[in-house]
Length: 244
Image (cartoon, rainbow, N blue to C red; front, side):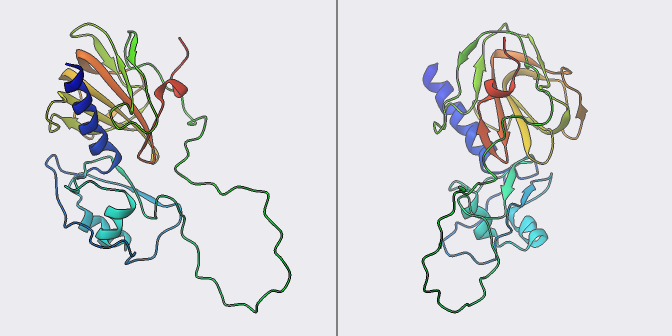
């Protein structure tokens, strides 16, 4: 059972962190055969995958080559994307900057900067809106940064127990396409924040539906697996959920 849960979490992590094809069925693209960018990165800009989108459609819309989209978002070998995924339009560890204008050599030593560079992938301590617990129960598995099978929390409960939206938002995915993950719901709260609810017994909302915080969205299966993501990256839900 534990091994099955580990595999399931890895599947969900792959789907959420690395894209969303905006049709209920996955779309694949040719693998990226080079790390050299084909387009100019768009500093600090992201795009949310919509229903019916493909990497090629997003490429045409944004002007960023499909290969760069795949490389900059570390898409897996299948290049699968799903609705609601936030894709970066710039490399993960860099932001785009204008091409520097040639200048004359400087003979003096430059003064070191006392400020550290920042990246947009770092989640703020406050999301700007209130989060609520998606269900009652004890947390039986915690978030562990860097571990693909622990990118959220597992909450114990009873079969059929009510699962609620953790914040206001729009349902961008409601289905069971991820094998071994049961019924899955993904809610987009704004351009940066999404939440995911896995292992449901029954889904009560449909894609495109607007939901309010604490609104019932599903019935629990064997337990709830819950993720919060900022710009596509998983963050510890316990940092944002109210303290018990």
